[in-house]
Length: 188
Image (cartoon, helix red, strand yellow):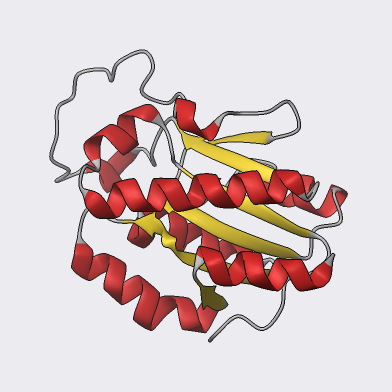
């Protein structure tokens, strides 16, 4: 579904733009997505709207780890640090998740409700994992969900396409960064 409006009390939620994940997601689409997410963060800050920056430090334990490829070595010390380009501000809200969804056991819903947020705009990496899981949870929690499709990326282009074209229209509205900023201009 195309973007219809930006609520007066919207928040930007940026998923997993952290050093270890961004470094692993090389290529033009990841670079472009990071640039657009930063553009959105700067625009939300300029408007005095909440910016929530989410990083991940773990994953579900147990059998869900079976069959995962990769090293069992500990990641570098700065793996979960947000990328410098986000230029974290004192007014930003930081959430650390240990699962795919930024809502699972993090206090994100409480934070957003305390701020009076009715709509979230989502951006980040990976489209088919952290972003999609958070979008599903946001929808389940009753938020008006907007997915900034050019401010997200996935290492699997087909998975990204599937999320954007098939899943996201069922969960909320999709738009480009420029469309979101244009709609926001009409609000304030």
